[in-house]
Image 1 (cartoon, rainbow, N blue to C red):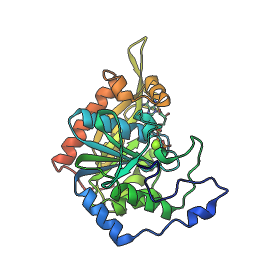
Image 2 (cartoon, rainbow, N blue to C red):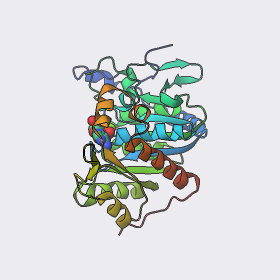
Image 3 (tube, rainbow, N blue to C red):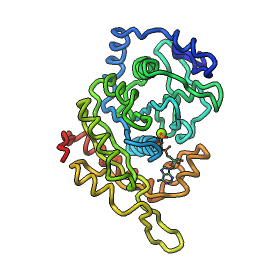
Length: 302
Ligand SMILES: Nc1ncnc2c1ncn2[C@@H]1O[C@H](COP(=O)(O)OP(=O)(O)OP(=O)(O)O)[C@@H](O)[C@H]1O
Ligand SMILES: [Mg+2]
């Protein structure tokens, strides 16, 4: 048992950059074989992407994972956001440790038995920055995929950092037979440019789009029971239509979401009856329909 079962060193503060440069070069062939053998037990691998930050990717990843698990699926989640890992907190498992045995690294057990892996479980302190170049992140993603004892899974959800940089490229390259990407947006993104960028990324790396989730779509005023479309109405829906991709769902703004995430309590579990949680059940059904009935389409960008 070890508090840091990964071969990589725990991220070090900026004053020790030399240690990071000394990280061992990945054993390409052996590592890839290990990834192949772990990933062949995972039926569907779904990455959550967005063209810009702060739109709710980690919230959607965590709550979609819970909704899929609630629908009876076995689910794992990888937090690939090394610089701002937030999945453990949103699933209420922050502060737990990864352990290792002869079978590899054991993920942390989250709500509904979701298997969780994040760099957050290895950080010595809350305010430790992760200062890694792309090649180190590539190695870490390799280990997340190949060294973790994922077992048999229906879904592996991959929460990405914002944008289409190193991590997105590594995920697209390293995950064998990646099922596809889900793109998260909010209605205010200017001319849907950020989403188009994400869609063009998936085309460039030859992967499929499962659909778009519009987050922060509207706010239900509790005193008036009236919907307020703070960023504009149905922009994500129109964009999905325009781009020819399925709209998987529209998740409302709800102050309880921000509060649960800040407190480290799993929102979906705590507020099962909320409009947002019901929408996540719908989104999970849509994902299952798209993914398991082979409805994934290649895109024709207009
Ligand atoms: N529908 C919502 N209603 C209220 N608050 C929300 C909603 N969705 C997300 N939030 C809050 O917005 C903030 C950003 O969400 P989140 O961290 O999931 O975004 P992100 O896209 O993963 O960000 P980053 O790009 O930094 O990884 C968080 O504080 C979260 O609690
Ligand atoms: Mg995030």
